[in-house]
Image (cartoon, rainbow, N blue to C red):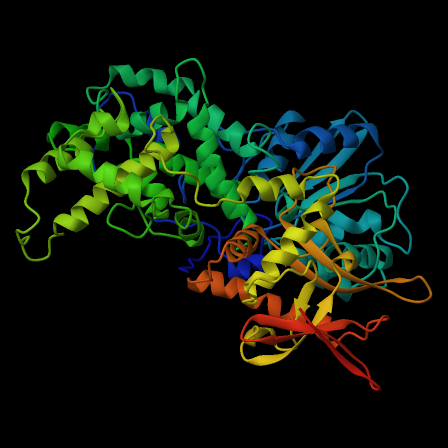
Length: 628
């Protein structure tokens, strides 16, 4: 997976642990090739939200959506005495945007790149010092001096009941921990609190201070209608700036306006079902735990996809040349094919993850043959529907060219052959149909278990999924026709049930399921952040004779592993490198199960090359084999 380096952001002096593995989205900013022509340029505003643009820091124009920080946290600060509020998280998580909004609502003027500290009153009589970047060094003083000034009111061995001035500070967790560690005697209480909150070293007791890690926030959950992504997309598609497009000579074929029209679905609804289908792709990427999706990721990706990464003068210049716009200008191609010739800019970790949910990867032979038959007859209307795809001239041109071409004619050197061109056109049509959903040829979403995963993760009693998980885990081991409701646990998971041997049998009643986070700990809702469970935790318990419930092992199951296990239950085996990498996670879980000294001696099964021969009870005095 390609990884690119991120630019420095206020409030971050070094990479957070997650960010060190998964770099934020960074692409080469598209530079206008055509000079301004005096005509409307709504895409100029959208381009400011592209990576590297001036709107990627602070409060973005057009699409800013109030969050729980803006509502719940600000409301709490207005009602309580001044206190300490620490915001941490990766670059792009929205720290600066929130603080800039607070400064402006308090009557101040946010000056990006000019000022780092602001003195405001949240309400009259409740003063706060706002620090945009708690890691910044200045000519006049060191960073340590800045932090000493910002945190001075919160020294001591106990929390301060009422500070004369509150502090709102965005700071990297590592920088704050280093500062407090070097002054642990002066900031005794704060040092213990920050360690407990950010490192898990201790328990966070009731405290007047507010520590918010924006890594925990989801921009795409907990569901489509209430997600922050929905708000951003709704504002972008409903933006009045698009009204000026009618004045443009490229109005009828502009790919950016085509993207807006496709996602709007209908004139009556600013955001219809295509927006929901686009959301499912982002939601799946957020839940499969390969990349941490920030606010900036969502804003810049939507600006790139909807605006085609272009400016209006560029589009008009290309229109004047009379050539069809390239396929990569259309969001369905740019979304699912970041590395191909269709892509705009450099691909990133997020692009790669999004592309794995390409709907055309689902191999449905009957549907494919019907599509190819219609393409051979150049009948796009039967595929897309009347009036659909009129803007995408490349679709019609390529369909006509293929209808006139012959499969047995060798193409010019370096050019794709008939089969490759047919597949390219078929995939482009399938991607478009997935988003629009207006045809019987529209492919289904890439994951069969997406809805099931969300339902279980948000259920009041997620334990109902235990039998399904156990059956799928047993199937992933290669068990053939096992009729046991209990979990098989071989000593060497990596071997599965190859060869002949014994495997421990752990009763299903000793397993429970709980919603979890991306880091594999129990999920809990947050007062000031939009959150959702990002995994299911399969918990193995052992009840001691004393009645104590002992947690033996925990398996964190994100969405993609849930899907892989479900496929195993249907007879499929992990094939891709990504799938096999997820299966490696099971090894530590099984090792803990097999090495644990269970309070009640477990039963075993004798297996031979995946086939269960019989059950066995083993102890020092007796060996009993009970055949099926």
